[in-house]
Image 1 (cartoon, rainbow, N blue to C red):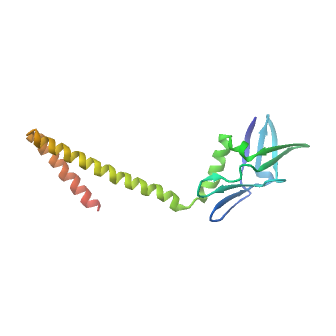
Image 2: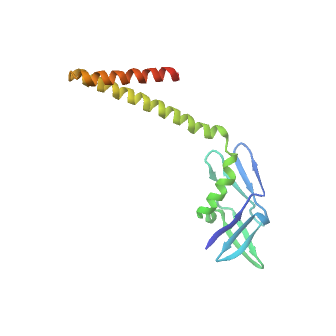
Image 3: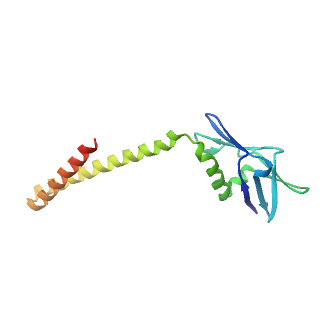
Length: 158
């Protein structure tokens, strides 16, 4: 059974395509069957995240962990099966994602809010038409008052 004791980057290196979390001896350790093992940079020594896909690129790489004379080999894929590993890794790399990637989500929210306002206005228009068809003067007066209020609010936001 694997558990993360500590996962801190020695340093993080980035370029246009990848975020590289470089690991070192004192910064990464695991409990394997309740025994503490330290990371040893013998084979792979970094976790590479693809910026575009926001996924680990080097899932088949092997990390080496040592406890005394015992050596254990753990693949990145095995580590990714641990929710706590993913949480640690995400907290390390999230500051390195581009700001415009985060802003893109905000733009989508603005578009969604505009669409909702437009749908509400169309629904109100249908309710006004129904009040006219049914000769319901009271409903017509309330709905047109609401329509005018919405129209003023939208004009002031534009």
